[in-house]
Length: 116
Image (cartoon, rainbow, N blue to C red; front, side):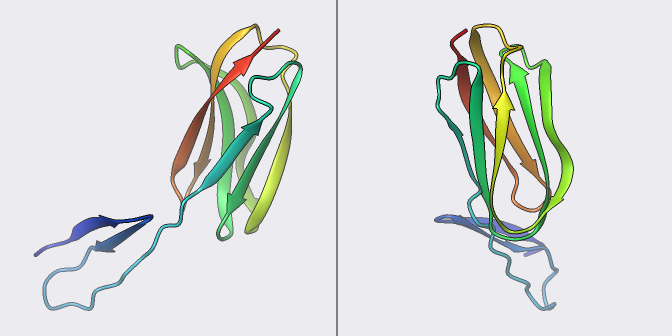
């Protein structure tokens, strides 16, 4: 078998090697990302936990996929929990998407709601 990927619970096990070569195994941990309160008024807190050091971007998009805010852009962060205090006074009332983008742990998007 030339390369394969298998999902097993919360991990993805991969084998990008050809037959007869050593098989590296990589586990990808779940990326934790929360926004609270949700819905929110003038401010929200975005909290995320990185299992290891990583490059991180956090962005907010409207329902049409247009970029509204860049809260963090390719920041090099250490493992652990981090928080961003989001000043949302410029947002109109409605639904948006908050997305965290990492180089090692993938992306996660949460639907958020502005009440103003």
